[in-house]
Amino acid sequence: MRMSKIPWWRRPELIALALALATVLVYLPVFQNELVNYDDDYYISQNPNLKLGLSGEGLKWAFLESYGANWYPLTWLSLMLDVELFGMSAAAFHGVNLTFHVASAVLLFAVFLRMTGSVGGSGFVAAIFTLHPLHVESVAWAAERKDVLSALFWMLTLWAYARYADAHLAELFRPLVGGAACEDRREVVRDDDHEDCAEKMAWAAATPAPASAV
Image (cartoon, rainbow, N blue to C red; front, side):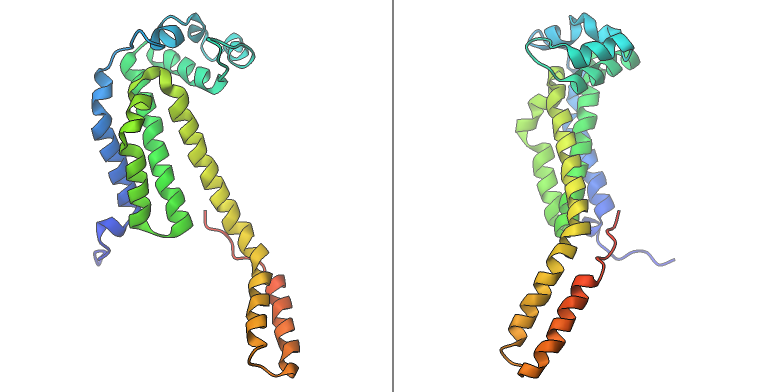
């Protein structure tokens, strides 16, 4: 079997792995952090509702009640799941924050790669996102679960739109491209060729768009 001659920095799977490993290494000290007495106490350690867990009562509280003048049920549900799985472990809260952040970085790389086709450029954008100091607070502060969660859902939204655009926008713009090509041709072709150009435009409009890759 011949070894691949593609350099590692042009292989998307290795870039994604490098992004994940670099993020974990940079944020590794968060596992030593404790819960602080600013928001962590009110929202997590002294919040009795988290101990309800993913029960009917817990779901009702998460979706129907506000707490601390905030209403974010998905954040409460994720924290409830942490408590059910790990108890009041500060390392677990921070580790889950880090997991969400790593997933967002890899998704951002995948989205830009899909939209641009540039492995290096997409990796650079994702690296700036995941390693920028502005994100330290969101990962290292347990109460900022809402920030890493919203980032993850934003990346998923971008991915969904990129798939939609691949599947539908090419079909929408194909007749326009065909029409533009015909307009260009009219400068150099005889009048009797215009009918042939119109037929090609009709064919382009009727041809189905290529299936989008998963």
